[in-house]
Length: 107
Image (cartoon, rainbow, N blue to C red; front, side):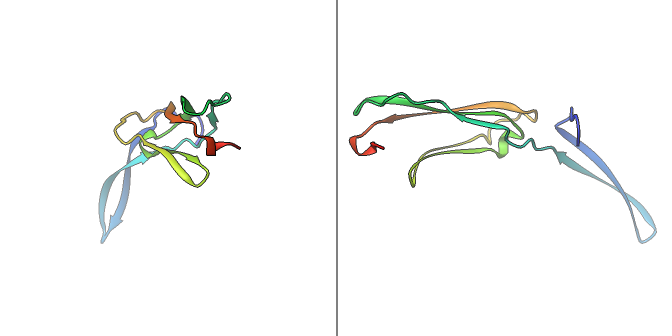
């Protein structure tokens, strides 16, 4: 699809079954793939102090299907879903997680 302007449409499907013509309505949901995901640069972290980790996702649709997971090594720091949102159009997303730097985080 090119130049999509309706991100959530209903489609009428016509078919014949046993010589009888029938109509079925179905929903078409257009997905927009990720173009840019940015983790804001983090300055030198001071041990024991709270810092913000910010992840930005530029224009994703449908947002209800998006899950952002922030990892530190093999550990999940934060998971954010957007199931409560109702927009069908692509929207930018920002996920902020506060963390406290620890000495063993070096590297």
